[in-house]
Length: 302
Image (tube, rainbow, N blue to C red; front, side):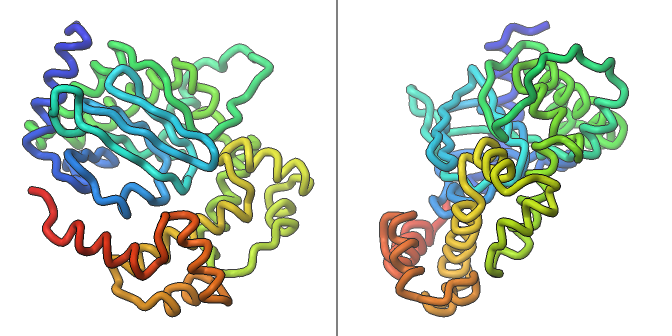
């Protein structure tokens, strides 16, 4: 097996010529990559469940009141849809940020877990819905073989599912294994919170009734609050607010909508309250923030 530095070198050689400063498809199902400076409004987003491996540079992810930093020495796992603010940096020697990600699909995880021996009870289930862990040579090796498929597209249909299972298997073996097992089990607390997150995302513009969500999740209101905060680092109301503000930012920057229309479309009844909460979240009033972002990224890289 290659050393970890050799693995990283090959991964960079495979990804760098193809990746852009936006979500870049690889041709491999659920595998994408990105390179360089990424527009701020794209880094402040609702992130899909994923395994994210940085090949060059570093990144921070702020979710609620928690900020995690990671670099090529570790990888990031997000098990549920979470509103987060990301920041990326080039390497110390100036090479652009470069990363690959595998979007998690509970059905694929569940099929893999069903084929594995049941782990010994640890007495503790994965609580948080996101974490960082040290990368291993075995995990990197699976990623190398996965990205090599970009050069052999005829092999993707046969081999990508095998390499995807291996990547997931290596993550299951690590400290985040309990978290991944939980999202594949709908009856686990994390599985039920994941369903509640889907309900909030689907109806984010509607008034939030926490009692109804708790009932759907088969939890008491207090238990629902406790588990939701543990998984997302946010309360249900804070989660909905982040979703609304992120969607409004997209409407302003990409859709060119007015502040008032964007506010009402995402569920605010008061444009003044919307502007106040928007400025608190993004540092500028919505109109100025949108103008600044559109001007800054009018000529995208590469």
